[in-house]
Length: 118
Image (cartoon, rainbow, N blue to C red; front, side, top):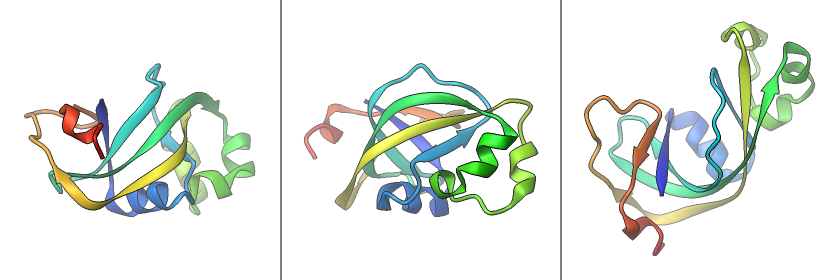
């Protein structure tokens, strides 16, 4: 399994099920269960299923604020091409699971099998 590094505020919204689109500046072809890592924490806080990746035009960004939870319109113009990474079925771990963060990892981290057992 791989873990996605997300800022604390957004990780909480993803794991609560409120945020179902993670807006990124690149597409991903990954699908399936991924861990959610709060940036700088060294811990995996839960999992979600990554089910799709769709281009997010400014119009789509503005029309679906409830999916990405970003209130500032200026964020719609943050990327040359924004992508909505679509997630569902969040699972919050009762205790966050520590992992070893490799040097240079900023988006994805390979996680050990112990995450699967949660």
